[in-house]
Image (cartoon, rainbow, N blue to C red; front, side):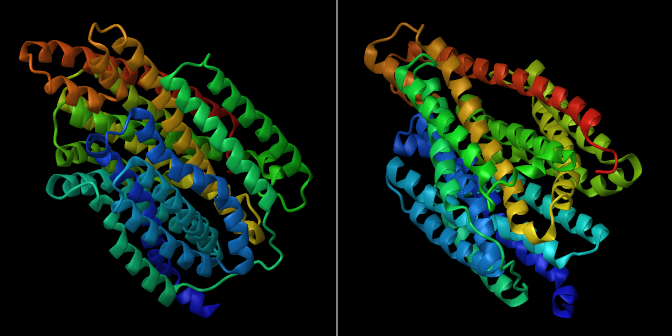
Length: 497
């Protein structure tokens, strides 16, 4: 115990390094999406799958992996995950087609499922004092936000001076450092009585993939398409079966009794909404900055940096804010502050957005996230018995990842549908029209390749405004949902959360 206690802060550092390769990976990729689309001729739906396949594998198995980590050793599973993630990143960097890239991204998600649940469960094991645990989780949340925020800047630098392949290769040295650091400083911990719900895991994979496929295809085709109906129906039926079996299983991957605690359910919902807004913003704004507004990858990364600064500031003052004003006000207020950032985008959204609105909008959105995430995470982990720390941590991580996956699927489908409705009204030959409908990147490539230069400006203006209109309606939706959710959090979350 003394070994664990004396090295607990060094151990936190090892966990943060391990966790950073996961959070960096997704946000670094966001800036690389336009380059990947141009190089591999990826459509909008393929870009969604490149991001979502990783998240879905991660989210659908990590609760079961968390239980297995509890049973066989959390440190051991963390190290296995680092190795798997690093090897998958190598494969992704060497990919020459979207199919290969999607395959290796799914393997990355498998490795990430070993890493993420181990981090919070080990923190809970090492930090037994509630005040220290809150500080530790606050630091963990700050590093989580910082690594996500630094991702676009690092990705932009890599794209500007090398190629998109290197956004995956960058994970290799970080993985080596994390493996060595974790091996040296982290204690091993177990819960021998933990059992893994493998049947639940299989059902979870099936219903999540079916729902996501249906949502993404609805953006390409329509909600009335038979394939969309079949996919969504399968997803909902399997989801119902999953819930039915989980409620009867003595070692279910999702202990539904936790949802009876408002100190668990409300913060989980808050985190889901925060991540939903953040992931959606980065996915679309990266494409807007580079493809529509003409910024290079590094400049696009810089424009996303104020979100990182806002998260860092919010996370730093979040703990003191909870002690002074209570968790409901800080969490609910943080969500509403995040909505104000989106409101700035709503009123200034244009092909040439003013620089001040981009910087201030992301700063305010990040500030709200930074306020809300640490107390939400602490409330969730504090609601869970220590013996179920791995499962509880995995539930928290699943909330984050599922909201990220649904953000890409739902918002991506929504934006793509509006974009396609506008593009279909453009009068052009079938070959050009097909290219315009593929993605905003493919549209720009096809238009600039036209021999008649006089057509360029008008066609670019039409496709750019089609993309902007989709983003505009998405921001309105996100803003309304955030305000309502913030009010509900203030009302429903107990003051002693």
